[in-house]
Image (cartoon, rainbow, N blue to C red):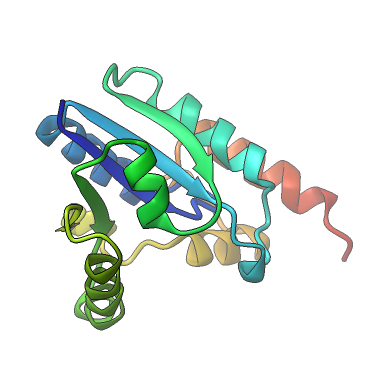
Length: 162
């Protein structure tokens, strides 16, 4: 069984992430969307909230599941018996960082390949950071995230102290 891990913070999950997930699901027998615990990024949503949003978004994709992890990605990928890690590239500016990360991951475990995937053109500008900023300033993010993510995002922003 060919397994790929698609890791990320997913704070929150965007339509660009979903596009990459759907593309990966066509290429692999099993795709694990691995929500990373990375408190240094100061996520808006808790790890469990992010995982639940991903679970809901992928529930109609039979070969995709959501999980969470902490620690080294390559250790997690090995525990999942993965053959590949999927990384999304939006623009050339992403490439240098992602390339360095892929090379380091190869040093850690050369049996697991890194595959770069680009989202549809319509999503190349999209990032979780931009979505949060637009929503926090009162903008409409309907076109950028699944409906349940938009609802959760607006509720979370209403809870934040001004």
